[in-house]
Length: 115
Image 1 (cartoon, rainbow, N blue to C red):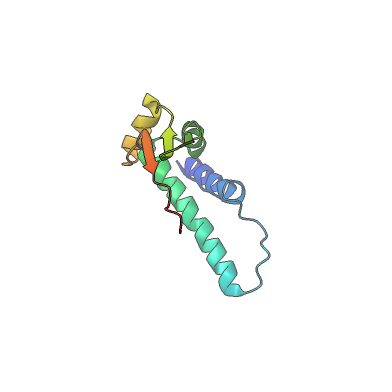
Image 2 (image 1 turned 90 degrees about the horizontal axis):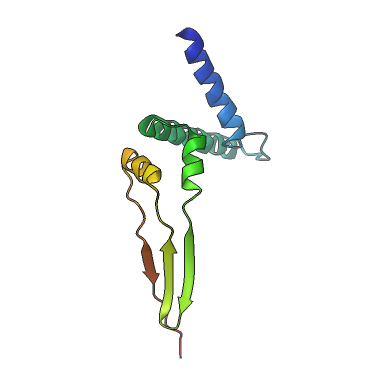
């Protein structure tokens, strides 16, 4: 059990260095350095919570979510944004993470120009 916990701690540090991209930063002010490390730590915490909720690794989740695409179509009456079909695996993951799937179509009006 101790070796498994050690492995998890080492994995978190590896992910923190590579996945979150925490490495030497060029901040000089101590409060900026602290803020940078805090943001990286919060991102790592979010990743771990998502992994625990979904029961999958971050890399598996990223691979699934990378398949989600958004297209923008311009028409005379405005812009229409459309997402691709969401697979069952992604829908299941969204349910585990308590997130709503994006709507198939999103429509944004074109701002009126000034005359």
